[in-house]
Length: 153
Image (cartoon, rainbow, N blue to C red; front, side, top):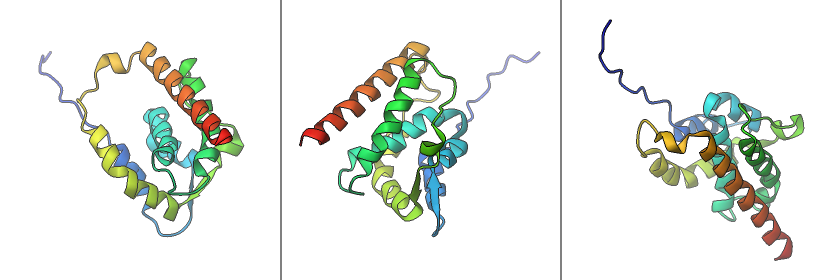
């Protein structure tokens, strides 16, 4: 039996996956397509994808309001420790034109790439069940607060 250490094999970066989804010139991409492309990391990927338009106000007018509901739904699933993200069929089929996704990817990639340079393998404390629940609470609060602010402004 060998006691050699296994090197960490980095997974494909989320920025690269999103760029690949946005690359074709025609068509659109659904949230279900993103979940399938990202696989086991889909909670984080979908949360990031839904949050990017909120960070980049004005990229696609009105999109952040539409994306608030799935953001809240996924946040609540993190809080209750769901093993996989679930979206109602209607939300899973929510589509964005590839040209709009390409704009989001172009604007958001520099920020996402900075986040991706974090420690590898990820710090165990940041992926513990309690941390995932905390992240869910933070995203749910942020989504609800953002929606309330838009309603009253």
